Image 1 (cartoon, one colour):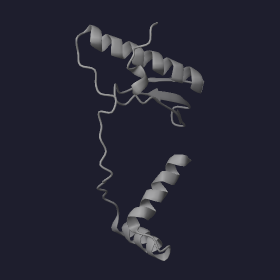
Image 2 (cartoon, one colour; image 1 turned 90 degrees about the horizontal axis):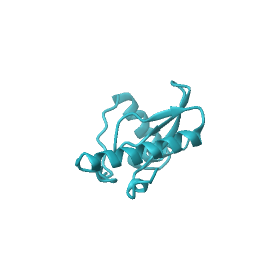
Image 3 (cartoon, one colour; image 1 turned 30 degrees about the vertical axis):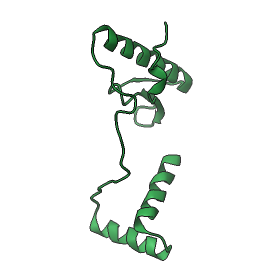
Image 4 (cartoon, helix red, strand yellow; image 1 turned 120 degrees about the vertical axis):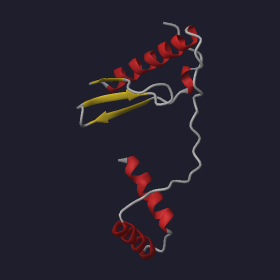
Length: 114
């Protein structure tokens, strides 16, 4: 199959799902769902094929192709949390001589590295 010229511009995510006990592949900018399997590389290859086919199908049907970077992020996030947790986070940040915003940002970034 010929690769769609714009397929490389779309973020493709493959991650391990403990709940499903397999690797899951997704392309959030194009579709919900995706593919899954036991081999991470095979799931990625299958996902790339699905993205190519999806883009070709949209064009064949004359439908608009979503922008690869359709979602813009401002860097601002409104979050509602338990007041006790808010207090604990603020006190911990103060004890570390850090801002609450920076402390939360570091913890969130660290959680993605796991």
